[in-house]
Image (cartoon, rainbow, N blue to C red; front, side):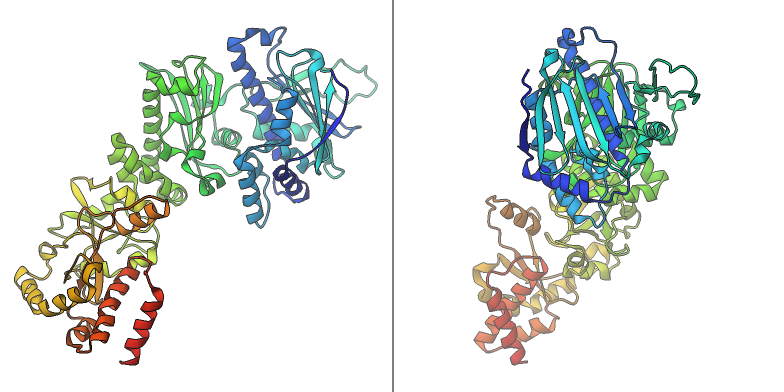
Length: 631
């Protein structure tokens, strides 16, 4: 063992985290105890798993436990575990230089909040630093299981820019974190207060949390020997009968596993016995985590996986499909092998059944919310609806169930609120309507104001307004629901005859009357468009772009181009409204230059309405100005 003390600087981002932690006023600063106990529990879980293959790691072990010790004279609070412990390199990697994308996102989230909140710390995997919310110095002594007693490591920092590392004689394996409390944090030196916090935040931890038994207050009596007593339930909450648990128990457990200070929105707790034996406790959060808002699909977190009450992994992504990555919880299987790994999980036959069962439980929970607690379901949809829509394209086995839960805005809903289900829509369809009509756009205003809707609205036909980036992709997979085809009103020929629109004879007459202006436009626009034709969609606007039935949507084309993909060029069809004054002016215009400007203006306007960037915005402005000058 070396007794040399080495001083190191924190990684830049960690230093920023510490600065925020030590200089912010937190509304829930007691969260530090939950975070440190959670870390201690994880350390015990990890050792129990490692010991399956290396039982010698537990030699002389008297059972796992987490101890909390208070020294009022020294003003210290110590959380000690006999879990897996850390080597010197692991201390540096895990505390001094956390190489996690979550650290940067934590900083971004904290800096964007008007009032900092301690619960964000745990969400981003930097829960250890919550100690500095209440302490002006933190000492950590640790020894990795399986190493010699003299190979302990001491880490110490006052939360500024540096920390010290030295060797330490530590007979016991595991980690002890000692907080040197700030002058105004006396409440955490009171045993009753600490016990209360353990009961509130950590009662469900599956290992005994112990504190020294308090004396009876008789100072004359002989001082008794130190006696530890367990101050939590010390049993895994998901293994307890539901009849023994109350909502507060479930909520506290959720906050522990999700590192969330908000209550869960809903949960489902089930024990399955038969061809498969497993317990699941799955939660819907009430707020979308910051890492989901900022991150990508490959940053999702999975469920905690246990096998026969033995912790296996913290984020088993294989237990739920990607579109349910917001779900938090625990799965405890009796059928998976104890030596299971992520690679083995991908090949295990039981996993597919387990995944299907967990998915079914989540969908059951959402069905129940949609039916019995619509306000809660509306909260879920606001937070996670965009993510959930991925399931319509990815989960073929549950496509109908997922589609039933989808919500959209529509031409008959109030504003941009997505509250219309496909069943609601079908129930309001006009007689003789045989399709579900929808429109995709770059935003609600663009969708609600689109000229594509004019004729349908005039005939009382409801249209679903889809204005999120995922909608074009989703509808390329979700093409039918309850026997009704989904039709994009911006594609193909919109046959309004069945819906009580203009009859076929009158339509032919209108087309024949407009042959001249259609021919003129085709000559003016040339190769810029695939075709020009009279529109059945328009009642007021002069022009609109339309795609063939099987063409890729313009919004999807833009998304793919932005992502660097080569997208086959597809020319749109320009539909015109011969009754519009601008089209009539083009028809009668004899000046070739002004006719060219009018023709290009009809195309430019249609492109702008579809969110298509103009090739030459300056030319568009010149054309508008020129036409205004001759009005």
